[in-house]
Structures are given as C-alpha cells and as structure tokens.
Length: 486
Ligand code: NDP
Image (cartoon, rainbow, N blue to C red; front, top):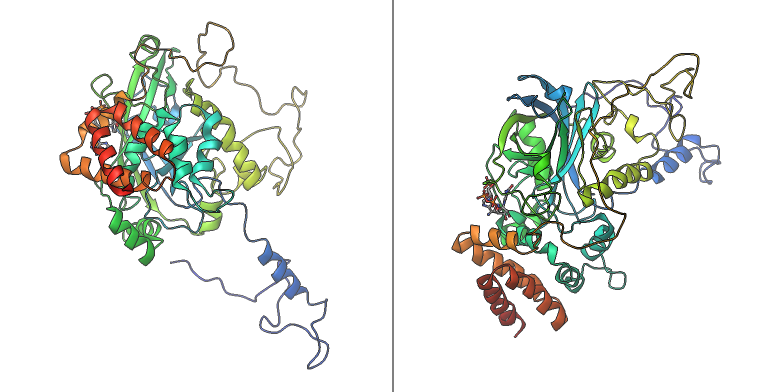
C-alpha cells in the first residue's frame, strides 16, 4: 500500500495552503476574489487532467516484471539481452482491450493487446502483440477504415453490426481472425489467463550477420480460461474493472503471473519459397513446419504505484529495436513502425519516451533531439549537433538489423506472392481444430451478431466467407443466421 506523504498542503508552486475548504471572498456574503490563486489553479489543473485516450487499446492495465532467458539463442540473434542463459531483463507489460473507450468494461468480446517493453542494455526493445497470433487485415492502409467499423457510426453514435460485417465480408482475409474473436477464446476470463503472441514476423540476426525470421509466443502458465457470452455480460455489469482488478490483486497476493516464451524460427532463405507469404499477418506458421522452441519466462511481480503516470502514459513502439533484432516486410508491421510513435507524440507529447515509465532504464539515451513540451533538460549544456569538434556521442557503424535483399519495381499489388496465399485455408483449419461443442458455440456467437446486420447482401457476403473456409461451417452458420432472421 502506498505511504501517504505528510507536511503542509501546498499550491503547485509549493506555497503553503491555509484553507482548502473555503475560498477568499469579498466580505462575509460576497463573491470570490480573483486573487484566490489556490482556487483558480486547482480548477485550471482539474480541467487539464485528461490527455487524449488511445484511439485503440484505450482500456488497459500494466505491471512490471522480469524476463529470464532459459535457453541459448545466440545462433539466431546477437541481441545482448538474449546473450546468456539465466540473464534477466526488467520489463513492463500492458494488457488491454482494443475497441472500447477508457471507461469501458474489461469482460468483452474483443482481442486483448499484449504490449511489452524490455529494458535492455542497448535501449528499450518493444513488442506490440495481441492474444491472437493473427490479425484482421494484412496492410496498415486498411487499419483506420477497419477501426472505424469497430467504433461508433458517425450518424447513430453506436457500434453498428452492419458496418462491422460489411467491412469483414468485403475483406475475406479477416475470416481467420474473426473466427478467433467469436470462438471460446474471444472473451478471456482475465489478463492472466490468456496467451500472448508477437503476431508479426521479426528479423533476428546473429553475430555473423546470418538472418532468421522469428515469431514470438507467450504461453500463459496460468492456463487458458475464458468466459461464455452470458458470464461476460453479467461480469461487465457487476465488475467492469474485472481484468484490471484481478491482475493487481494477484500481484498484491504474491501470485505472480508468468508466461513461457517460445519462438518459431525460419531461416531467411526459406521465406521466398515457403508455401504462403510468411509475412502475412492473417496467417500462422503451422507448428508442423516450424515447431515452437522454448527460450524464456516472463513473470509479472510489481504493480504500478500510479496508474495514470505508469499505465496511461506508458508508450510502446514496434520501432524500438535493439542490435540483433529488426523488422520484416510484414505490411501491417511497416505501418505500425510509424503509427505508434506518432500516436505517442500526439497523445503524450514530444518527450513521451523520456517519462519515468518509458525512458531506457538499463541504457542511456544520447540524442541530439532537444526541447519541446516538458523537456527535462537531460542533456545539460552538451552540443546539440553532429559532426562537431567538441566530442560527444559517436556512431557505431553497424545497423541494428541486417540488410534485406530486394528485386523488382515499386508497385501497388494485391497479387499473391506465394503458391498458397489463400485467405480461407487457415480459417478452415481453426474451425476443424475445434471440438463439436466449441464449433456450436462459435456458430451461435457468429450468427447472433451477423443476424443484427440490417442488409441481406451484407449478411450473405459475411456467411460466404465462412462457407469458403469450410463447407460444413458455412452450412451451419447459414442455417443459424436464417433461423434468427426469420
Ligand atoms: P497445430 O495443431 O500445430 O497448432 C494448433 C494450435 O492451436 C496450438 O498451438 C493450440 O495452442 C491452438 N489451439 C488449440 N485450441 C484452440 C482454440 N480453441 N482456439 C485457438 N487456438 C487453439 O496446428 P497449426 O499450427 O496448423 O494451426 C491450426 C490452427 O490453430 C491455425 O489455423 C490457428 O488458427 C490455430 N493456432 C495456431 C498457432 C500457430 O502458431 N501455429 C497458434 C495458436 C493457434 P494452445 O496451446 O494455446 O491450446
């Protein structure tokens, strides 16, 4: 429990406050004086307590913890924090829902964000994943449109099933992730009982400069637990903060949640000839092709002291790489490399990366960037340009990641690049993996929402995507939707 600080109450400038219950007035029954500095300052500060909420992932909770490397990975990456078995790295994890506003309920059908910041000796390394290994779309240019369909309609001011299914029906690549969302795993029981995925493919490069493509899996050690739609509806009303409370209280009890970290590794040369585009975020790499390999353990063991300072102001960017790790050509990732930092500069400010929760803790940031809102003067009087004859920070000469060989011309293309770039095969595999009861619940959940879409053509396109994933899937879904619309 936080210790209460004692001493005189003060103004923001530190002057003692005589009376925090009454303002200075003109006489006994007269109006308040403009010189009531404490009152004016108090009201003005209150008016500025909110910063723009995140446009997605607004609702979340976070905790500090430790990553421990348990297996040697030096043949794949030269990342210093992954250099030695047993090495521990401090980290911060923020878990979130996606579509809801800051004050929305936790127990909803929505993906969960799984954003990590590792405080390494080479600077912060961030991963911005989800509790699903795939995503709704393949390229960032569709992201704002997609999120508009998940949020409030400009006319009705509500989320509209017609908009949601219109977009998904016209975006067949969403069929795989949509099934995840409406399956049993669409409403996790808590932030502790879900697995995280880095989702994107990343480049790892070893000391010799050899390149590997890597996917991350964070498998919950608490076991996967989910809520039924009915349980979630009830819990959302009774305890809207259920996930946030569960995480904080578990850590307070000393029940530290943990995740076993695995990776899938593809040698770089295999990417061009693999069956499908390995950088397509709507697809997993089947375990039979690239078996997951255990590399470490994450444990959350400390709650933030101040939720606004440490969770609301925390920022994560997939562009925060360290030597030995870099981006892949994944087109969603490429957009996110820009969008996250841009969101932070808008939402928190130009110096967001230097707030206590975000600044590098095991490294020192030495830049020629200066000033801006709430600059803390961390550079002192050192020169702010380069090259200079006064000394100061120097370049290392070695890029963080390895060069990517390329051929061809610039272009816009949706043409498949690999033989099996099909949007429905893996969506069907997920359906076929479920047992009979899980299939029935998936159909019921999907049908319940599709049936709310107002137009026949929207409903038909939505059902048709699942029909193409698996004939039985489409037949049962069609029947369930028709029964609800009859
Ligand atoms: P595999 O049999 O090799 O892997 C299946 C995976 O599915 C397991 O990792 C398991 O993870 C997970 N799984 C089990 N039950 C469910 C469920 N109800 N909902 C979601 N995931 C579940 O097959 P493939 O690699 O060929 O994948 C088949 C399908 O499994 C994919 O289309 C994908 O939707 C899903 N999947 C694949 C993953 C991958 O990285 N290949 C990861 C997760 C899911 P767990 O230990 O969590 O139960």
